[in-house]
Each structure stands twice: as C-alpha cells, then as structure tokens.
Image (cartoon, rainbow over all chains, first blue to last red; front, side, top):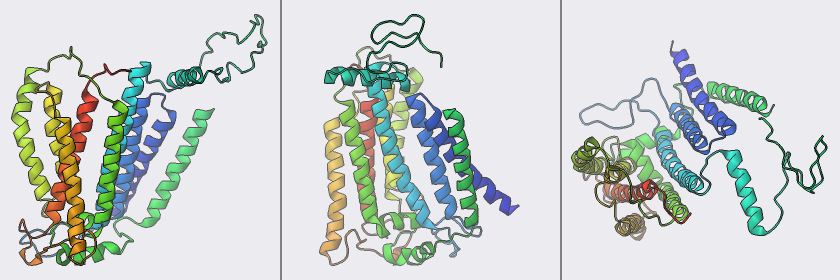
Length: 159
Length: 229
C-alpha cells in the first residue's frame, strides 16, 4: 500500500511536468503556453518536495510543548519556496510581454504573430520579407496551372 | 508528423523522469544535509521554523539573489508595459466586489503582517505575507476604488526594504561574523517573537519588498490598453 502511494505521487509530479511541456510545445496560443509553463513548474516543485519526504516525520517546525520528533528535510522546502517566487517573477514578465503583443497585433495566435513580426522587421530594415515554405524567396513563379508572375499570392493552404 | 513526434518524445521523457524518481525510493530521502540543518537550526538561528532558518540563516545570500531576480523581473515588466494611462471608460465594479474589498483590505493587511512577523515561528514568512500584502493593495484596483497604489511610494518602500536587508547583512559582517549571519539570537527564548534576533527584521524587509514589487506590477498590468502602442 505504502509503495503505491509513492508511485502515484511521483507519477503525478512527472505527469504534471509532461503535461506542461506538451502544452508548451503543441499550443499555438501564447497565453496557453504561459499556463502550460505554470503547470510544468508545479510538477517540478512537487517533485522537489516529494524528494524530502519521510514516512515517520512531521513538518519541520518545532511546536511549543511537543517533544522533539523526526522531521522532514527542510532544504527541499526552502528550495521550492525560492522556486515558486522566481516562477512568479518569470510568469509576470511573460504575461507583460503577452499583454504588449496583444495590444500591438491584436492576436495571440503564434503563427500569425510570428508572420506579422517578421514582416514588420523586414519593413523596418527595408529588405524583402524572408521566404517561407509557402512563398519561397527569389520571386520565381511557382509551378501550377495559373502561374502568376512575381511572388504569387497563393491561396490559403488548409492546415 | 511533428505533433506525433512531439508526443512520442514527451512520453519517453515522462517515462524516463518517472523511472529515475522511482529509483530514489519514496520516504527515505538520500540527502543528509537536512538532518544537520535540523540539528543546528535552533542553536544557530533561534527559529522554530526550520524552513525559515534555512532560507534566512543558512542561505541568506541565496535569498538576496532571489530578491534581485524578482526585482529584475518587476523592473523589466514595468519597462515592457511602459507608462499606461488608465482607460476612462472602465466599467464600474459590482457592489459585492466593492463592499468585499472595503471589508477585506484591513483584514488582509493584518494577516499579511502577522504572517511576515511570525515567519520564524509558524508556517509563513516574508514571501507569503508579501504576496498577501500585494493582493490587499491590488483588490481596490480590481474594484475600481481609488487610484491604485502610488508608484513613487512603492518604489521608495521597495528601495528602503532592499537597503535594509543588505544593511542587516553588513551589520553582521561589521560585528565579525559572515555576511547575513543571524545576530542577537536567543535560542533560550524559543517560540517567543524576539527569539530569532535579526531574522524577523530580514523577513519584514523581504515582505515589504515582495509586496511593493508585486503590487506595482499587478497594478500596471491591470490598467487596460490605451498605451502608445
């Protein structure tokens, strides 16, 4: 029974980290990516706290009028306290950037933001926008039944 | 198939993480430093809460670094957001939120300072209490009462708290011990408010700094658009 509790707790911590990383890699929405980062952080913190657990011990705080008992390791708990605070700082900074992106581009979809950001950078530098898979650089007409001259305006390819 | 590859990689990653942690063994921590800290915490710092003893007594320099990371994040956040004018047409908050804010604000102040000052005796401390203070000052912004915290005042509080933290550390250095070592410790008075010497003062500095930084950051994030964009 006791062994299963350890397995379940470690599985939960590893699962939270995995869910967070999956969310960060597969999501296209910037705010959801920040939330996924928060979930991954929670998993990492849970794993650290679990590393200091002891079966027969109490929280590492002396109580008045209670005889000394074995206590769990206080160092991982202090580390997690630090990690939570730094996590809050990182999340706040990420959210301010998300707010600015939303104000500037009006969207939080990552593909759209990236395309518009690259176009803005190219316009500011005065060079032609870099090519993409759909629109290769060089201005060659793409093969097709209706080959338009120059960088053709392609129909939206379904994703 | 990039999505499939990602999922496959992550399944493997999670499995690796899980098997690695299983070899640790649950309930039998492999670290020995914890027991040493527990043995020396009371005599060295006078704090009943061993986590606070670790955080401020044994690795106070780390806490100073942590504070500077938080300061850097708050400064960078303010820089990214820039100076924002409050939107004139913000909708008024509901009666429940406004009344609840007026009711909760003094209560949250008291609880925040209690948690900060008793951080060496009970669960809590400067970071936890500082977050409660920040929430107390952020509630009126949410409810639309008043103009929110004064940024100049917040900056003064934050600077003074950071300076106080470093000055307490330097005082220990001047007295012949190492930087940020707890001073005036009285382990005989364990469980009393003044048992831990400079630890509650350090926690007060930490709490004020964290509260001021987070309150300023939240207030500038809450102002709706209307920047120069």
